[in-house]
Image (tube, rainbow, N blue to C red; front, side, top):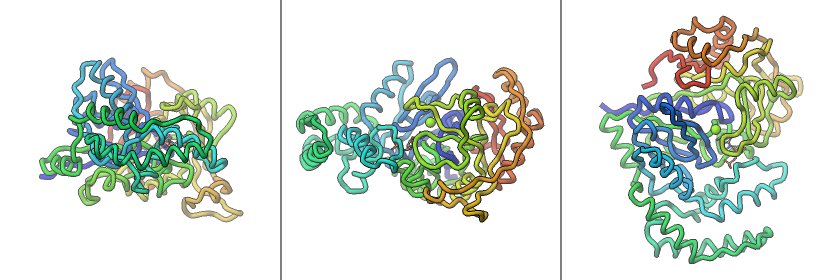
Length: 434
Ligand code: IMP
Ligand code: MG
């Protein structure tokens, strides 16, 4: 029988707690695959007493699973080698399959990231400065270097001979005074390719073989759906399809092979970077949520913008991902706020909008309409953990139960799990996802 292909995506602007949830489910999978993004992501994997911070590697590694970087990812080889070394230093073998057709983030992509942002002015996304956008631009323009190109010095040199002088001119025209030496880039990136050689494979074949063999494959989204290039709030997002729509293109697995799709939804909303944010909060409530939810970027350390749960936006992401269930996280971070609010609809020029309007210019003008629900009091990590251990929603404070019931109703989706604390084990599993 063909194996299960389960997808986990973020339903908001990222940082929904996907890392922790993927980590939790990775234990039950045979293989964990990343299909989009690059080292703009950041998540923490805790195994026993060890804590790993990954930006690029899928989260299954410390669970001694096969990990795959699919063709839809953009790869900074230096970051990848550092993360592999970090795992090896902790005594883990790294069973990595790196797609030969993933694109490589080159030094000129990183240099251009900040310069492009400066030109964009108010249209800048507030990127992580990791070269993500410029690398995906070159991929689309068929100007990119793929992982496989790193393995053959002649091919690499032939491509870089065209690209590097062009990028050099571009960088100079934007004010850069740094000289790029073609030969040293060829030498350096060929060597990086040699260091990665043993991991490089044709992933379309490999992933589909695993499924044919009946293995369980978990696909982890790296950013949230609303940051997606096509489905998110353009241009204030990232450069890849950060939702279930990206799995087929980014891992070369047909849509009909996917067996289930789950969304991770934070009990409130957060966003790093620029762009309209209808339910954004400021002042004391925002500060409280930010502190209780540790809302500071994993990759850049930036304080995150926070706001109420936006059921209009999340209903949209539930729909386009056709979610089988949601996993709600960070309920504990909403504690000691009374009442708590959920945005149920938007008004635009006094008229009710029935759906998420997608366009940033419209989203900047909408007025969110809220319902209020009674809040709940804070508990210690240990108390939340004890509640979770009962593995029953009825063990939760009744206000939390009402909040969850409202989420199910407004988003028109069933709960699959609820996470109520920092600890990975503080998760109430309501049904198996594999
Ligand atoms: P880029 O992906 O570095 O180009 O950044 C584009 C936008 O996506 C910026 O607003 C970033 O803050 C945001 N972004 C990228 N990756 C993440 C993530 O993992 N979590 C939250 N926001 C992200
Ligand atoms: Mg993150």
